[in-house]
Length: 205
Image (tube, rainbow, N blue to C red; front, side, top):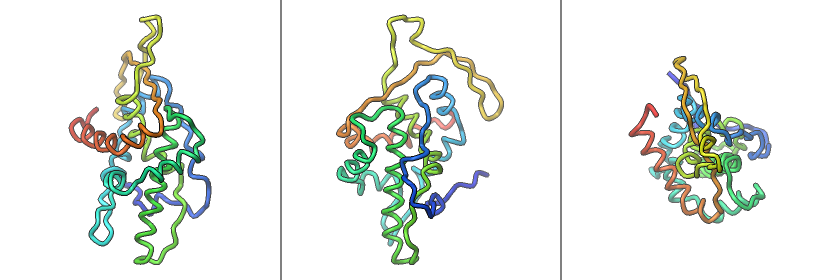
């Protein structure tokens, strides 16, 4: 059985920049489909999104926090740290990591009076592992096909090795994401809930 990190365990006592060590190329069809079919990555993202955290009887799950407590001001602060004009494939991963870092920090603050522990900076590398499948799902489902003038090049030949050793050979589009801050603010919570619904209805991808 997979042993997941708890919210408190996805932490590091260091004060490292949460946006570091989250670089992952998500611009090729091969990498997108590899990660999309990665069962471990999917289980980690689902664990994060489904985690039923509560404080004093209030719902502090990540999905609920996004819709009820994550503000436009929070996003603006994260956006400024990333220094971007638009959110593309690579930036989306860093953005999601920093949103989870913000979530962990707020959750620790409301729990601090009870456990007396000081808040720690989240470990960006570990957090990245928990948002990668969510990230690539958003890219594939909310991005656009990278269409070229040559119709034969619209899809790439890829080969994927599944966890059980099965090899999949297929042609696949390459998906690109490019959204402004306002679009992300309006949709990030909805995308997480759609991801949960999609993964619940189609566990095997």
